[in-house]
Length: 259
Image: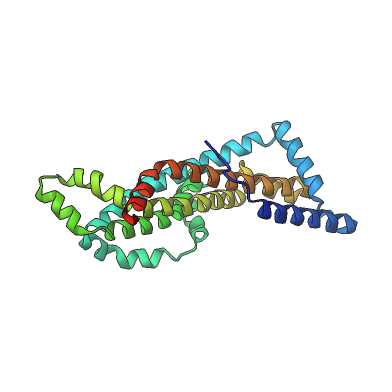
């Protein structure tokens, strides 16, 4: 399983040049190094934190909240999206509410979540679920509504029950849309978990980053930021590998239709 696929040499070179410029600028301005430390010092701090196991507990806490929020959002949003996409009346009744809530910044509900759930993991997971659910829900609805109803009606005519039609026709046909929503929500989940940890957390990478900033340990602060970026990149690459395998049938079918 190729987790990182082909290496984009041009993109990698650009990234390395960016890091070298950062290093040179920071080294040339000693007075600014408290706020803008050299990359070499940040990477050294990151290695020290990882090998000293100081960050392990924070990584586990963040990933635990991320997985709970992301998986729960997937379960709820896909289920609700199928219902709203399949039944026109259900969508008509809920459309105005969806369009009212969807544009609302997810961080705006953090005070509400604190009011009802207190300060703890439940609140952070709930906010993550709320934020992640929208891309999955909207894409699932679009995928189900885009299905040719003739296929479903024909299947029902030949005696295929509603649940079998859902499993054999609706889910496979809507799966490309659902996968798109899942990928968008992946980054949103990490963003909301980290943000929530900064506001109310006592553990996790978001808490670690803010705590190091308050203590003016900027090397460690940037190391935490780098680690969040690496986690996001790794999760995205892993998702792409899994998506490639899970959706291989769809690519073969699409290629067959184009021949």
